[in-house]
Length: 429
Ligand code: AMP
Image 1 (cartoon, rainbow, N blue to C red):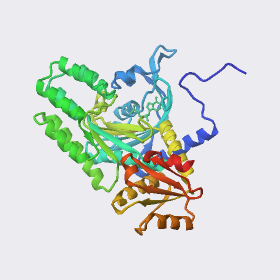
Image 2: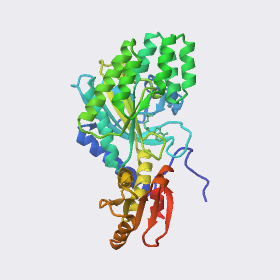
Image 3: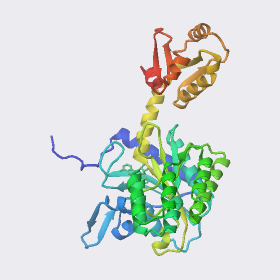
Image 4: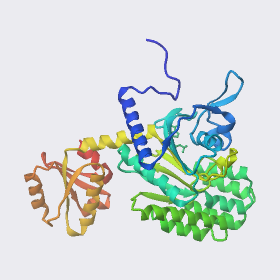
């Protein structure tokens, strides 16, 4: 057999995987069409200077950089945004705003290879350029939500923050840009203690330190309440207050538009790319702790590249990771498909819990009927037997205290106590 192998971090896509990848890509194109985004195709190789200008140290240090035969310093693109911003600062500079542009293609970063982390991976990337309005930010969140749904994901959640909150503090404290970037990089890696130390060493006031300590702890899914708390905390830091107000406006728009998006606001959330100026966000699925996508507002990048001042907001979705998540969630659905489940509370007080467990299973694609007749257990089980259900999930007080339920196989009459998060596995077996 030949000794040749793919280079570390690089992969072949065999037919099944290639098909899946093209499927997700097709969904990404469909969503682009639905939201009015036009495709552009930019080069894989760009000048090192362009790519490194505002990417941030984290991305910069992981670029595939080389000299071409003409002696130019070039690199494989570690993201799309710099290329799109270059176009808008040059060829498209006189075109009417807003621009809605998208790209799909391969991206290169010298990351440490592991599940969901490769050195060549694929992104679908959308940029909305020319608007500073919160409805533009809301659109990017909604578009991302649509893409995840179209790709076939049922459960995913957004993590949201706003760079302006922290920048507002740092600017008012007169921290140098370089120091600020270093702090943000540390916060991005959740190294809060180190980050706080840097702030302190840079001579920030005691008030700033107290505010920061509380900010990094502040997070929650009751998003508007969290934003209120942020605003309260940063009182006296004018730009930070403005940032909190901006975040509230965006989130209110999203929720009033009727979009049900599962979201958590984290006041201490930071992202590796240096060019962000406003809202930032990432998308996660439950069983994977790596982001499926991320984006945010960057109002000064195009100017920095010599273009007209053009506020902008965008997002990049990791197609490889979406594939992984879809595979995990889909297989769960397929495993459960066709199995019929009844959920029975042992007593009236546990009705709400029974509804909750039912909903969780439905979200995973499993057909569930919940006992609504208030019957005693024996009667309800008899009825489930008669109707040829496969499993009964019995919600009892004692088990619930342990975060568990009893699952009964109606064919074999075997029953066992199972943790709620393991119900799907139990049904599979
Ligand atoms: P970023 O521009 O860093 O926010 O990346 C956007 C998205 O690209 C991330 O949310 C991931 O889904 C994906 N991504 C980033 N790095 C990698 C990698 N090394 N391998 C696979 N996907 C990645």
